Image (cartoon, rainbow, N blue to C red; front, side, top):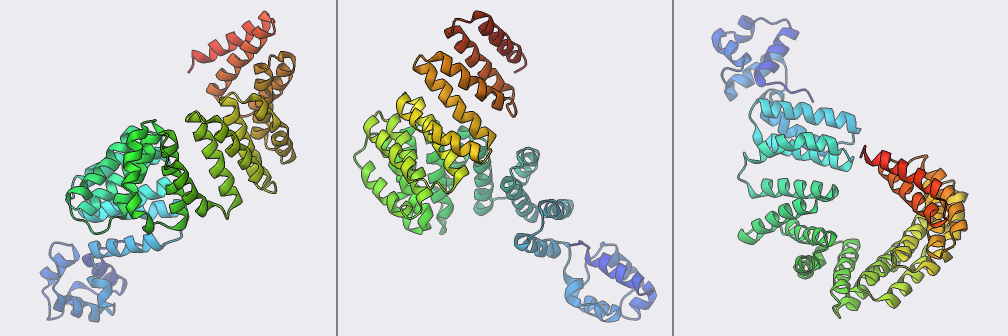
Length: 419
């Protein structure tokens, strides 16, 4: 994807073929004019280019494609390529450098968007942070709504990914405003902006605002794929649950129709319902959904099932359903040990230990918490170690072993100073 100006192509071809300027010009073009063409000082007219192409025995289409056209062509090639991350990153940056050098801001903006998406797809958060300033400068150079929407959507998606939901909301809202204040035929970006703005509001627990955003999407649901329809109806049902609206059951049924044929999806669907019913203080419904979810999840997917069981145990534990949570800890542990998944093993022991504490069974709790801690410290970061030291200190305090309790509190304090 080497980028050369028309003049550079002529000069390179001429030198490669051993032809002098005078020989190339003949009696058709002056030497001074040809020199200016080669050095990019003037642009060759079509007649001159056709003569030069014939004289050098190169394709006219090759010569006539100047830097702008080459980068434009390369943009399309990049979109269709299947290169590795490193190669694709290098190609995009190479083209982006030339686009910026020649002041082709429209192409630079397209290339920056492609690079941004590449980093997003590969979880390169630091790369994105370094790119944002350049992207902002290029965005300011355009007046086209289509380009502005793409930029806003990229920023919103990034901030949503990094859980900076207030920032994401501001960009999704700007997309909505552009569509609401201008006639733009393609409404897909508008619909998704409404949807994800609503999800961001839900994530910061502003449920009424979330409901308002998702309600705007209802009339457009038919443009979604079947999977997207199921996801939308489920998210809308969740908001109805949290707002205690009677429509919740209706939208759960709609979502169920799109989830029912995939047992993993169906189990996750019911597990999430259970979590939301707990939030809405509808404990009986929550318990039923969680029990159904655990029963449905396919056991042949050992890792997935283990992770799912731990999530369900966590939900039950957080909602003080200790006896019910304890029923599933052995199965979760057996699955984790069977596939030697240390993070799941740690969680299994952890919840057994914590539930024993809630039941006042501190001797059993000590055994399982020590087992959990042994596994945790194989991969834990400082924050996880800090939390665990505090938990162990509290456990030993309840056991009346003050020396051990002080030891763990001291370890926690030493980490806290570094956090």
